[in-house]
Amino acid sequence: MKLLVQKRCALFLGVAVTLGSSAVAQATSVEEWVGQRLIVRYHDTPDPTLGSPQVHRTVDAAMARAGVRKPASSLRSVPAHAQPLQRLSTGAELVQLPAMSEKEVKRVVDEIAADPAVRYVEADSLQHALQQQPVAHRPNDPMYATHQWHFHDPVGGMNAPLAWARSRGAGVVVAVLDTGILPDHPEFEGTRLLQGYDFISHPFMSRRAAAGRAPGALDLGDWSPVKRECGQDSKISDSSWHGTHVAGTIAQRMDNQAGGTGLAPEVTLLPVRVLGRCGGTTSDIVDAITWASGGAVSGVPDNAEPAQIINLSLGGESRCSAAYQEAIDAAVGRGAVVVVAAGNSEIDAREFSPASCRNVITVGATGSTGGKASYSNYGETVDIAAPGGDFAGNILGYVWQAHHTGKTTPASGAYSMGGNGGTSMAAPHVAGTAALVQSARSAAGRLPLSPARMEALLRQTVRPFPLVPAAARPIGPGILDAAAALELALADHCDIARVDCQVPQVLQPQVPAGGQAADAVGKRYSFKAVAGRPLRVMTYGGSGEAALYVQRGAPPQAGRFDARSARDGTHEAVLIPNPAADVYHVWLAGGPSFEGLTVVVRQ
Image (cartoon, rainbow, N blue to C red; front, side, top):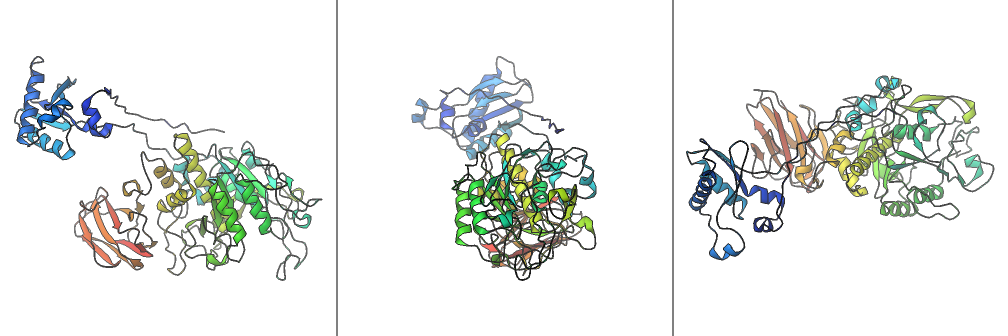
């Protein structure tokens, strides 16, 4: 497989620290210590033999004018005077101040800057490696451009190309609990595909000769040749090859100049067969969840490669059972992220399982226009939306992945690419993105995200719905954005609950972003304004309390903003009469005390 080689451009400043330095000992971090050093440049470079005493006197005098003096008792541990360190190649002098606060440093800098002999003065600063921005990858698979809108389309897609510049999912095991897989499909050639296991116990459903469970996860077909054999309303149906299609969304091969691509083509795929003729049983699925996540199941060898991500594109019209919940809780306790489809019955997902279970990421579906797919279940239990496809008179509106033309057994047809639509197609987009995130963090030497933090990350980095769902049918805060999720997951020193680590949600003028709920620190947004045309930022609806802050060019804070509205409730409005052609940032403070709110920019 051809891999994109990402070049990095780095700037590194080496800092030698003397461990015995009292100034360093007094600082709480290297960054604080470096900030207590000043770079002072005179208009006329002093004689090398006189420069250090001159800067020494200049800084000491500035400290006196700024009212920064150290008590005599401190002389035993921290110098009371500025200490010249070295002359830089530019002719500037580097000076170490006595240990002092950031505010004291600023006062000293201001006093030095007022000296007419000084060209400039600034506090030294700690530099970090700078990484080149990733270059979007465009797979050479022919159907990627023509059919796989769900990965790259700016309206309905989930921004995969930029994510591929950072991660392909290597080193992460993703379990697909479904109808099994067609392992010899050309779109899986060269991928890391585990043998898996067949958890269907009954031979009628499994179409295996004997009862019980068995190694391997070959999809033997789930066709139904007899009316009502699966239930009073069941019909004759062909094999769906559902598991192969779902697995293809996650892991089919990239850049083989054939077919299409998967979202995380370098993952290790663990197929687990739980659905066969007439579907699957809760007991089989529960055991499969346990086994896939590394738990012990009687009569089945332990899973040597437990899954970090489990995809469940399955369900039924019932609330989450205790058995389901217990298995899911145990899997999450082992560190597995459990992703489930919301269901395709256009009802509240709380009436569906496992969509209504706790500790899962429940995924609703959007179509190619970015709006809620007509069939998708909805409600407060839906955590996020992702492309699931729709027909709308155009077969290209479906999600296209690995498929099969056979109507019954694998021998009854040929391998193909096929289009499907449903929340079953939306869920693996989320599972694949979770795999990209965990793989990228591992490659960067970072710990994997916990299941709860993964859900928070994915929800926090969504992009707005181009077509906002009706308030009575919410499907989460927005559409999955793989590139934004990777960006935040790899942010240096970032805790995703911190406001300065949020990737702002991009707002489009005149397009309301509904269903907004506060994270721990509120919500961040950004938008590009047009010069000279008055703009208004408004919030309305929902419940709770929210304060609205707006600032040009940088995220606003409580003490730094261009405009603010802080009325009681959630109805806020800010007017910028004459904006510049620049990016404006919005902060809805008050988290976590508002939900269901709508924010809109009008210009």
